[in-house]
Length: 398
Image (cartoon, rainbow, N blue to C red; front, side):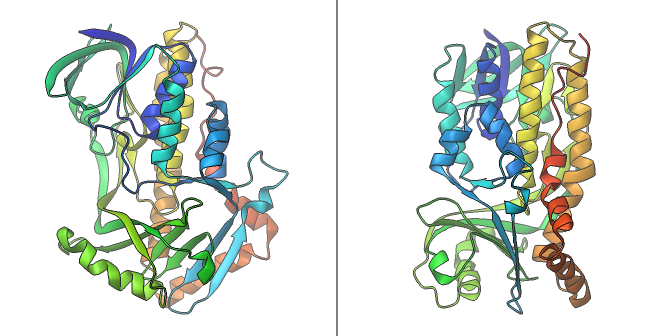
């Protein structure tokens, strides 16, 4: 049996950034990841301006900006008519520290964080290590796992479940995951093509009830994300066979598209009934899962991370009562239910299901207003900041 102050299940961005934050605070931490390395399949790749302050505090913003790129513009385009409405984050200049979004594959962010984490001897990442069960008492939490095929038991003061929507940690702690699963299948693709040369903006929300898609440049090598959805009843093993229809319809006349990778997946609107049970804490998709329209899933997970690692380090150091972790659980759950969940649902409905002409015109009218009403634009652009929970270590007495 081995013991650390904190065990973290999952080596995605939420798990690794929590580990980095704890390690920087001098807390011993071990990350358990069932995969053999950083997941490379298409995942999140847009970091809203509001989370960049947190990346800077963790010492990651500079390296992440060098590997990715900063972007200010959005375009909403109606597929059937070709109407486009564009606006930009330049409206936030002088109002916020980072008036732009960062585009970077989440796998690259994890790799950058791992490079920094490796400098801390009290931080360990165990690859090929799968969590099977969790139990706890008033003094410790224990994890039964298999590491490289061999059984292993690990013990720590605290466990963070950051192991995704199918979280073993959450299930082992018997925490319900309430909500719904969407009847569509999302298909995230990475394609390599110079869409800018063909007149495509860096980010486009393509609005259509069949060919709706999110099209966004990932990096400076002409790698783009093209995410669409299809009927979940269609066979998943023939996703690739249907892909040319979407590509040819959305990008007519562009015949040099290279399919680099793709990932079909089901998407949910769900939240754990609590983000804390004793010494077990949930964060990211293990705590809440949302459809990707608007990029609010990663945003929520990062805001969980920023407040959690700081609070947990203070608890372990004895600077604050563990009641702060109840506040973390309550406040982050409220943000998801009250703000993230309805916003992501509305975004999905707009982009992928705008079949009613009257509803579409109403929605596009709201988009057009943003180009002529500066106050309305700033108000909309500030929304991602409302998903943040301020530091809790000054709000709960020890």
